[in-house]
Image (cartoon, rainbow, N blue to C red; front, side, top):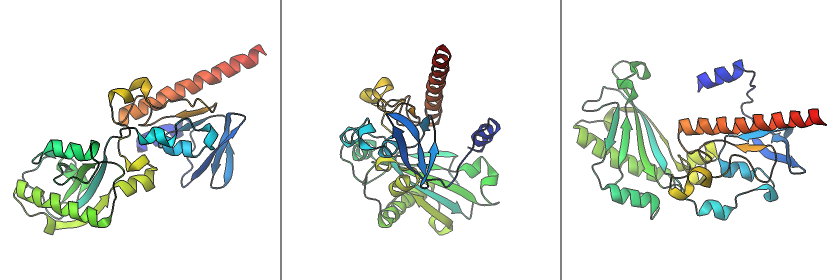
Length: 272
């Protein structure tokens, strides 16, 4: 992230932090600018890398391409319950990446895609980055990241987070043959409500639309708005799909279209 910011600044990009975009202003079917903290910033183009559904909510209703019913019938990739732990000792019987498939995979998958609910016996992933990069934890300690895949849109409460923390930690201790909970000196959780509040993520999803046959390639939400000239989209909900490399590629696709439009505008002005 810091590398991308440094590169952007070297190319003249200006960053406006703590700037809440309240509305995308449109005049005569064309982007006019952004209303930010109650101040209009005029612009010929808007390229949004935010959640696609959220971005369209910033438009007046007649300029939205995709309705609420469109989003409701879409199949979304999972959300997640995450735990960030600091451990005051070095863990044993673990690797940098650890997948715990000691429970029924089909049952967990069903609770995500078929009958959305909190899984009774969740599979989970544990990452211990301090095993590879020692500076990520104090000497003699370990940093631990835990992920449980969940269906988006589920009820998210502190009680549920604690309940599932106890479930997986009991198994984590048993499977790695060591005591861990009593050595936790930092414990932070992140779940559906946080994805919504921090990223305006539809249903609190973490990975965008699922890569089903009917939600791939040109069948995904479009990079260019069909109703507002000058409005473009990037990110995991548009082409080519979720993941860091595809999201970056979507930005490249969108900017190539903007550059093409700019060149056409210049060409037309010259002809006039």
